[in-house]
Amino acid sequence: MFIPSATIPERGMNANADLAQRHRALIGRVAEDRDKEAFAELFDWYAPRVKAMLLKQCGSSEMAEDVMQDVFLTVWLKAGQFASSKGAVSTWIFTIARNRRIDVFRKQSSRHYVDIGEMEFADDAPESEEVLLSGEQDSLIAQAAATLPEEMREVIHLAFVEEKSQSQIAGELGIPLGTVKSRTRRAFEKIKQQLEGVL
Amino acid sequence: MTIAHHPDMATLIEYAAGTLDEAFAVTVSCHLEVCDQCRKSVRSAAALGGSFLCEETGVEPLGEGSFGRLLEKISAASETPHTAPDRVSELERGVTRGIPLALSGYLDTDLKSIRWKRIGPGVWQKPIPLSPGASSSLRLLRIAPGRGVPEHGHGGQEITLILSGAYRDEIGHFGPGDVADLDEHVEHKPQVVSDEDCICLAATEKPTRFKGIAGRLLQPFVGI
Image (cartoon, rainbow over all chains, first blue to last red; front, side, top):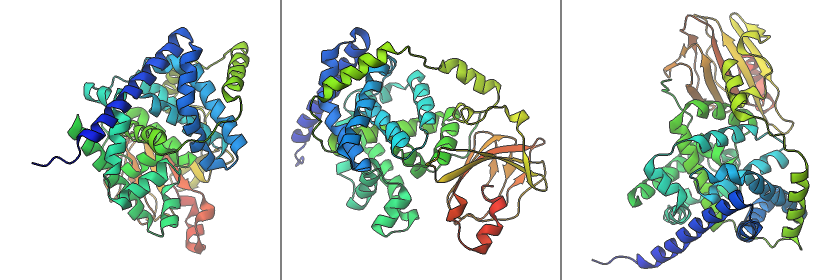
């Protein structure tokens, strides 16, 4: 039986899984030893990505740079708290950047996100989820997202990368809000199913 | 707490992406405090955000000497005494006041001492002020046993979380922790079925978005 190019993405997956493990180790050093070299390595990888994410919202490079620095100040200050959790570094940094974006660009409070986030740190995630969250999750999710039908991929991309609300997405694509919601639900279900198949 | 009604998965994904407006985000947060299942979904959805940050967002060149400036901010921050609030005691305080933690920053009183404003027979409300950038409204509602509100539709999305008591409508029975996540097409006529007042937290889109005289007439009931 022909197995479609399974080996190539797998190599990429392992490389990404190594990277995710590396990032966790670096956060551990930042938390325990206040290691600035480890922090610099994380900064080099994530800062240009966080800045790109923020730039989509504010359009000013200086402002995106400032807010990005705030994000990494939080990473430094809260590394100890995060290091005891099981989550992926990418998820954590994404949520810090998301909260800063809400505070600064939308002028709303993101305090409730912080409350929930701190509860999650205290959660005991089940075994299978620990594996998902700590290791290969980013590349697995990216692979799963890549296999989505274009119309589903589009709504997820607009929500997480362009940070558009579902009603904005509906307006932009000229489709009913209900359609955006059903595509979003189906996309997420498909991604979850594919991840469960791997684990 | 047995929870029968949860937010729409599409709403949880918006929450994780950070695109829900404040009133809705606060209401969803309050539900997450008591719902393991939805917390897990939000965690997976946030992981989607993390993955996209790494794989899809792209990279933007940093300003000159960016890391050096960050280190300066870090030493400045470590010189300022860190006065982070003690979350655990804050959580306990919220619990003893009978209100969810996510709401405790918005209310300086407990549920029993709220100064309610009557908006109809057996129906009271307490509007909750939000940040200046918010385009949604948040309020607490209190409805007396046996009371209901006239059948109404909504001018937009509406998310209601039951804090105490219970009501029943065309969709089902809603008790503490349950969420009614309704879009503008749903019309319902909730009736309180508990012996005590039913208190809920209701998030709606700003009334300015509602169009037409009918929408304005229904405004006192919007959010119910």
